[in-house]
Every structure is written in structure tokens, then in C-alpha cells.
Image (tube, rainbow, N blue to C red; front, side):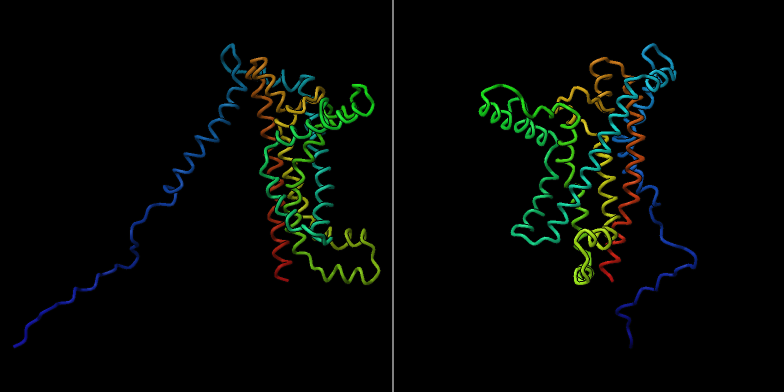
Length: 301
């Protein structure tokens, strides 16, 4: 007598060509795209829409022709390009030199200085400008010491409210943004090549030009383009320095929108600034992968 105590279930029949149902990929992309559109794209669309919507009603390109043909816009555009280019050049020179010293010149505390650079990047821009005002302002430490020595109230360091003061503040603030990718690139440079060049009698300047600089050009380009984007959109440093002859695009937007209540003109200038920023950021994104690729190739060599 045989009895069946357990009967195994029949295996499921899988039909060829059938896959289990899954949620389409585009459905997963909808929530982040909706959030991005609401927080970022929608305000940009409003700015662009307002630039062609005059206060009198309807839609017109009159604000564009008035702004693009105005002397104030041309002056602000030239000032913005001049300040951004000058700040970027200063940051590249100073950042390359400081990063080179930290990476290749042994001194006590070099690692600590490298860590401080990361902390310096997190500081707000107005704090740097405020500290410069405490030092070089009309009532700052340097001018106060000069007054105490001469007994007169003549201001020795009066450049802080000039374009040169804006350049000094931006170079001071943005230089660590160049140093960070450079320090990473310097750490991948083969020191054997440097030692070989030095043993053959190459001077330090020639070693930098022919050995170090070619290996770090992508990192230098990435850091420089990033500084160019940020200095182009800088508002706090220019405002806090109080420079009278420095009116950038961001300050012109503030003046037209807040002081003059001319919102269509302010939106036109903002759209121009956005286009310039996106173009420069695209340059930064093109340089960044090259910097990472060069670093990876040197690490794997």
C-alpha cells in the first residue's frame, strides 16, 4: 500500500519571448524631471518670458533692443569680461605657484596647508571682502598704522574701492578653486622624470615648463574655466567692496530690478548672463573629463 504524502508542484511554464512586467524607465525619470523643472527650469522660463513682456502689456522685443543698444549695458559687459578675465589670470598664476610649492617644495605643515585649502573654499565670499576691508579699508589696520606713523589722516591704501580692489578680493577668494585640481594633478606627476631632468642639469624653470606644466594643463584649464564662470556671476564681492567704477552684469541686473523697477530690462540682462554662464560651464565640463582622464592614465602607467 503506497500513499502520497507530498506532491511537488508542477514547474511553472515559461513561455518563450515573454518577460515579466516592469515599470518603464521614463516613469522613474518623471519625478526628478518634474522637480528639476519646477525648481530650476520654470524660473528661467519666467525670466525669458518677462524679457519680452513689457509693463504696458502684450509682447515685444523693445526691451532687448533698448538694453543691447544702451551704453550702460556695453560698459557693464566690458567690465564683467575684464574683471572675470583678470581674476582668472591672477588665480591661475598664483594658484599654480602655490600648488607647486605645496606639492614639490618640502616644508613643515605642507599637508596642513593642503587641508586648509578645502576649508577656505567653504568660506562665503563676503567674508573675504570684509576681511580685506578690515586691513585695507579707509579705517583698516594698514591705513590706521600709516595714520599713526605720519600723524595725518591721509589714506595710503585706497585701492580697495577701485577695480584693482575687486580683482584682489576675487583672486584671494577663487585661487583655492584652481589649487584643488592642480594639487590632485601634481600628485600624479612622475617624480622620476623631475629627478632625471634635474640630474641632466635642467633649471627649475625649464622643469616646470617642459615636465610639470604639460602634465597639468587639463587640470589648469578645468580650474581656470571654473573660476571664469564663478567670477562672471559674482555679486557679493563687487557689492561689498563698494567700487564706484565697477558695474558688472549682475550689479546692473540688481540696479534695473530693485532700484529702477525695470523688470523687462533686468530680465534681458539676466538672460545674457545666463547664456554666457552656460557657455563657460560647457567649457569647464569639456576640460574636466580630460583632467580626470590624464590623471587616470598617469596613475595606470
